[in-house]
Image 1: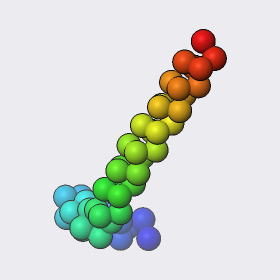
Image 2: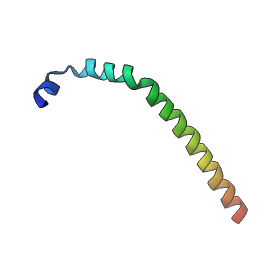
Image 3: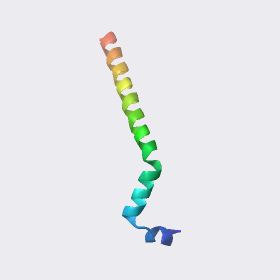
Image 4: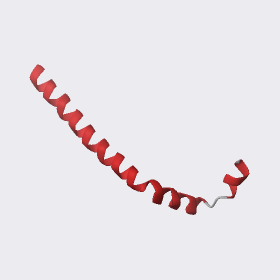
Length: 51
């Protein structure tokens, strides 16, 4: 298996992976941004209510 992987062209392999999972990665980024923003808003609101 290692010899097969060593023969792979790095640029071509990266391109193929991005084509296969690119949409999923974009969805993960968007979800992470939304969830992170909401978590920050909740933390800020709780801090304002307690402070």
